[in-house]
Length: 403
Image (cartoon, rainbow, N blue to C red; front, top):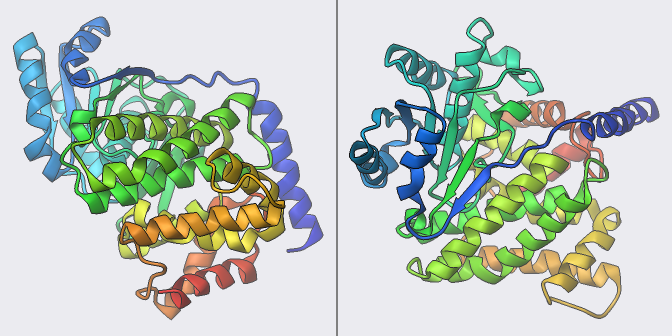
């Protein structure tokens, strides 16, 4: 990468860091514990919402949403349900939600599920308050700039952190380009963390979403700027919680302590990366979601150790501290401890059946992946190592080679 371009990227990040410290970084109000979803009606009444839009995917719409809809019925709160959000939600889905919201005269949103329903509902909320601005024009930083309707997020996975973030990630169905709207107004008002909503989550999805949360925490921790004392602390706590409880939840979905702690860890990781940013792992993972519909958590899980190894000495000190905090290795040098931390990520993936690479990436798609990843990461993401075309392509080819 040329010196001028590198100086511009780092300069942008340094200036943005100064500006970011002047903004109001609100966290959602957490409502947690077994049976927390029963408190949703009182939250809506506090916001004076008489009819609410409930947004889910098909499976959650059939299995978990009825519990919430029954609570709304009992409390006399009218609702409209959109149960058709797909993985990697599209612009067309967002527009359908917006239209149904307006046609039904709804006054707020409840998003129930993983990242996809939350992202779709956030984007629809943005379109409600910005009716004359297409989604593509709101991609990037701070382009919504209007308060959205009351928004309650109910995660059914412990991973995406969407219940606490400023982001809504949407896929253009025509170009397959995946992009993010990032605005402080998209942070939900409430995050309802009920472990009962994750009890029946299959082991495979428990694993992938848990590694998604780990990626959020680690990437936020490694950012060279934007971090605060709070985001660093929350990232550390999230990493420790995930190392302790993820595999317990994977092995026994009925373990409510593990399910609760994973929801808390994902919430902390979500706020950490909301404040501090993510990095090249996410930038590359989003290209896989757009081109191949790869689940985001799975993509992050596979890419994370490869990128960490590629970063090398630039991240050894911070990874060494994480190795100490998680009791992986308390003695030895930074390089040795960092290697142990990365090795444990690989071991966790292996124990939970997550692959080491992807063999479906097409050779002809690599230039597009590189272009999209670099456009997403630079200059906004405060990554520990700036990627140019050659280095990004090298990492993508490692993902293929390690399959």
